[in-house]
Image 1 (cartoon, helix red, strand yellow):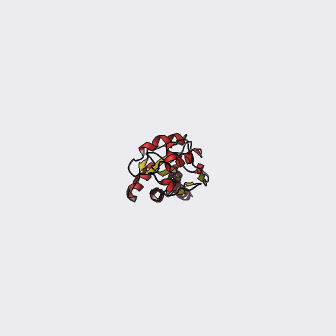
Image 2 (cartoon, rainbow, N blue to C red; image 1 turned 90 degrees about the vertical axis):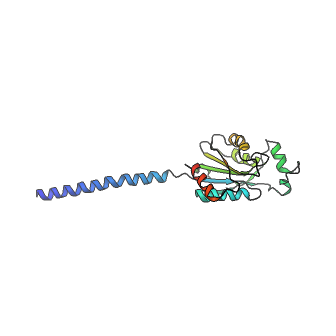
Image 3 (tube, rainbow, N blue to C red; image 1 turned 30 degrees about the vertical axis):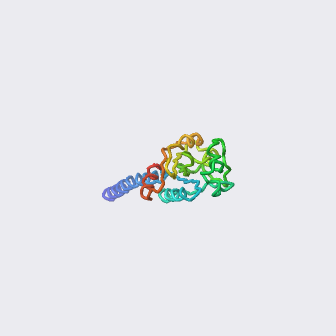
Amino acid sequence: MKKKCLLWMNVVLVFALIAGLAFPVVNVNAAGKSKKKKVLVVYFSATGTTKSAAKKINKATGGKLHEIKAAVPYTKADLNYDNDDCRANKEQKDGSVRPEIKGKVKNIRKYDVIFVGYPIWWSKEPMIIRTFLESYNLKGKILVPFCTSGGSGISGSKKGVKAAAKGAKVRKGKDLTDMPYKSVKKWAEKKTK
């Protein structure tokens, strides 16, 4: 009888030991899954260059891709920078202009990290980017700007993006013009941590 009791106690102890080792592993995995941030990649692209960069980020992060579209689309004439009276030049000169956007991001609250991409127009972000950022409550969101540029880079857009994205944690942005996918992936993964 004592041998049976001792055998049962050993079985119970072995089971308890196995269970004790297994449960922390399950909890660590569950905690690991909950730490994965939900990513949204939004972009405005007048000629397709910024769209290409946005697709690279989206592929690298597995996020949701959303294009910012103007309610009144930009024509070739609207983007003729040699003409002082073209739409893009007028909007950039008047910082209060907010071009209307077609469509909205559904349930933006569910995203933790929002990459926002745009071309650089006269050393800063297009005013439609400010329209987008001012249209949502971004408080507490991680916002990562990225751009494509013919030469002036992203630094001139930092102030406008930060002012329009009230309450967001705006991280240092990057010019992704002609950047290969591997480099974009490495940068994007750092920004989602």
